[in-house]
Amino acid sequence: MNIINFINRFPDESSCIEFIKEQRIHQGIICKKCAGLNHYWLENKLSFQCASCGFRTSIRSGTVMQSSNLPIRTWMMAITFITATKKGFSAAELQRQLGMKRYEPVFRMYHKLRVVMGQRDDRYRLEDMVEYDEAFVGKATKAKVRSQLKRGRGSQKQSKVAVMAESTPLEDPESGKGDKSCRYFKMKKIKNLEAKTAQHLIKDYIDSNAVLQTDKSTTFSDLSDCIDVHVSEISGTKEGNFNLKWVHIAISNLKKHLQTYHMISERMMQNYLDEFCYKLNRRYFGQKLFDRLIIASIYPYWYDCG
Ligand SMILES: [Zn+2]
Picture 1 (cartoon, rainbow, N blue to C red):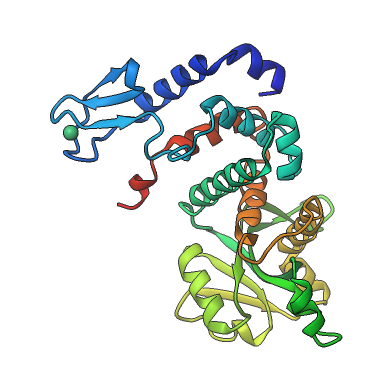
Picture 2: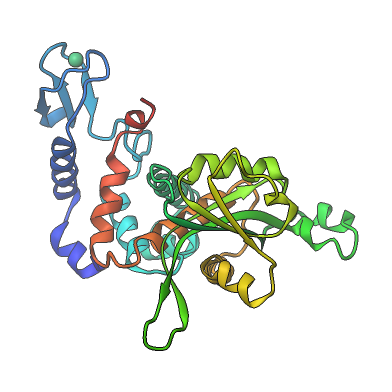
């Protein structure tokens, strides 16, 4: 979806409402009060009314647009811009493109969409062969804090990130040279590099039948509770570099990607990681990415809460 297609397909707010309504009907509306599945559409209230108990679900209720005053078309146009490029958009650039007067609503909208991206990816665990490593990325540090930092303690100005990648070795029969193919990635902001932190992440995000590949750091010295097979190589060696090939490529691309943004606070860091991974994991989707993010955005949050 590029902006010309968007304007032709969605010329006004009512065309956007119609589209979101159809998407929600297609996903199925479940009454929050009685769990009824049959609903009537109330055009003048922009709501679905439960056929059993009369409870109303507004078109925005439970979606990313809940409690937002921005027009639905603004949300959809933002999704068009965000999914049109592999690179990140700064909120200021998005504000300019949308022609909005105020920065703050755009900033909040963009972050809500990043949260949606993260929630969608959290539904999947990594499988087969998985590389795992830790990285440091730059973050915003308040001037006062900065002045108190000791020289050479650069790590205090950086966020710690755990990076995981599904990566399977391929043997090229002609050259005999080894290579690896990659599939899905995950990146999680972490508080520290302790073994416990890694163990929790591995339990949460990696299938226990996977083969885990790490370096020989003590963080990974005992993972027998989390994973059946664990391969570790000394970092920096030829084997070590091959072992963690795709996480290293992803980390280097992440650092380039984050340069788009002026300042990223520790608090918001996970949202930026989520957008980066969401797009990376869907790098072959092309134009379909718009529809996928729309679907994720209107999928009610409470479905995931059980
Ligand atoms: Zn009901």
